[in-house]
Image 1 (spheres, rainbow, N blue to C red):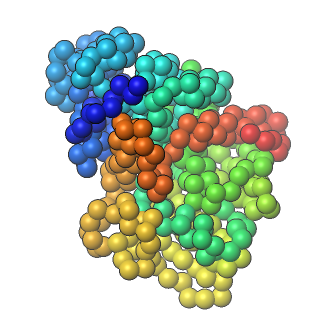
Image 2: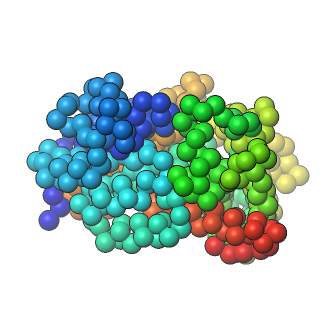
Length: 385
């Protein structure tokens, strides 16, 4: 029997990680409450007890639902009559597997930050745990939540671009262009292979670039060849990567991710070219999709306009000309998760239009990083996932 059957109202949410000083924790909390689908009622927000308590007070968690250990949290919340239905995991990469496992085996839905795990071995173990659990697993590849990314995906799916030939995706930043300050917590764990996994920039932002390319095009990867660099002296994992992609069916692609590209703040961009047309989406102009027909005039499709379709419309909150952005896109992933969780309350299937990154996407993302590392060690040899 579904122990959440009969529940009504907002979904009771817990959080692990994401305490003071963790940018992504506040993003998850804002996204979760934006549409009123979730209510944060419990948390183990830090591995340091003092910080866990201080962080909980800061976000208004009651003392009796504040934990200093995620295992204790999973056990107790599973026993409570009003315990959490879902948990958001905003901890560093190497903690995703052990934390998610504890909640999955108790039937609590998991909404996990990317990448799925620090290693491919742990990612596969987590996939098995998810398969044996009644709980849902949602991965927050948040860029797939932008309405105009959904618009691009819809246009590819209905054949507007023709047969896909080329995929170009890039995600450059510059914030790790030098040796970080000793107290920079975000830089510290992202440049530590024990906590981030074997991929640096590839694991942190390269997985986003790869995921959005796969999400929009639907193409399956056949092989890749990667050239990874650590430009900052003494850095043990990559801070820049150039990756050539071969897709099944003949399409070709290139992926560039970097955290040492001076002047680039968060410059995610995707271009897809087919036999009939191309599309381009940029994160710094998320409300616009550039459409380039072969031999025809370029057009700009905007979110909420008459030129955008149903897929974008589902995730649009306000009229065109009133900008939506990063928080709204992240909240769209939470909204899709909420629709699936509410359907699970009754045992019904969610609406067919509901789409979110799954455990399978997570395993593929970690496999992508693993393949990049293997390829680079072999002098950019072609390897499969």
